[in-house]
Image (tube, rainbow, N blue to C red):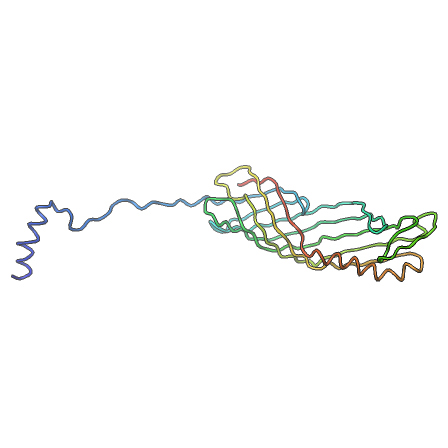
Length: 237
């Protein structure tokens, strides 16, 4: 029996008897379509440990966004250390460029990495108390009428201009236009600050100035990172 006879006598009757079903079946069910989330730009106003700042986010894809921000604040605070009263001007100024990665397709949680132009600085003017006080870990007693007779100490702390950043956050990936909220939590590595101490005082304090400067510099080196917590409102457009 040749192949043609086999097809006519065996296969064709089976096809006709089954109504043409069961030989080759094609699934005509349409494949599900995954709709992409709309991509929006957003601007935000936030406040926290960097001061008061503005964010601007540019979507790069469904999972990544480029975010730019600028933050700043000026503070004046009074503190006391080792019997010296300090009046300090603290200037916060940072400008950052970061990438936000959204690991969950339908969520606003993101992981952030990037860097900041870092111009935070501290300027302090210190005046010793009258009588007993400590400088360079030595206790000294003076019987003077005013602290100005003892002199003053100026302390300046400057930091490197670049600080890498890593953190996590929430917000900036809502599915519709309008107002929402956002938060960022992370750390910047600013390294060792450059501390300078200058004094105008009686002779014995000039001997101790180098020791006190070293002690303060060691305190600055103990904190090489700057904590970042920023929270605020955002608007997607």
